[in-house]
Image (cartoon, rainbow, N blue to C red):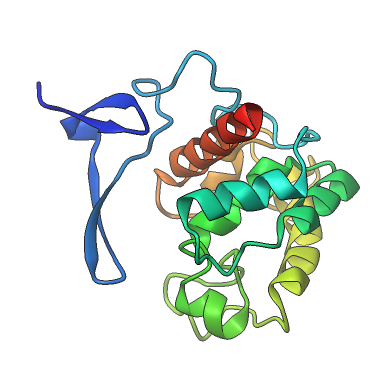
Length: 197
């Protein structure tokens, strides 16, 4: 079977997804899947997102800088850490969710509306229905309490039997069934980066 390498991980070719990003064809992978997970990876689709991450804002910013040096999300690390501590939501998740939803801060929604989480970007009106914010910091500070209340709290409208996990959030948050794997992959990559730094 033909294998590809991404970040040192051998991945079966059938796991590869192609993505056109900024006019460039790139290979993307749902890196965290049972077939591609590293034994040392701390996050799975079943890990509770209601936990404090042992990471600094600087480490989150440096991770983004190492992967996408021109990302407009560099500088939000401390906001993710502070927000994570306030709501007891994992800061790696807060960052990974924003990186994925906003294409590392380069999406039209992120650039024009400062909406880095795709909040209210429904399939039938992804841009016009999406909420606009004055800044990316405001987006984090307004979206995270709502996400916590609606998706991560047992009495939340979109809370599922899977609990406050990526698998649980994916049910109502994203129609892409691979969403949870992509977020877990970014979380694990960032955690490995932070541990090494």
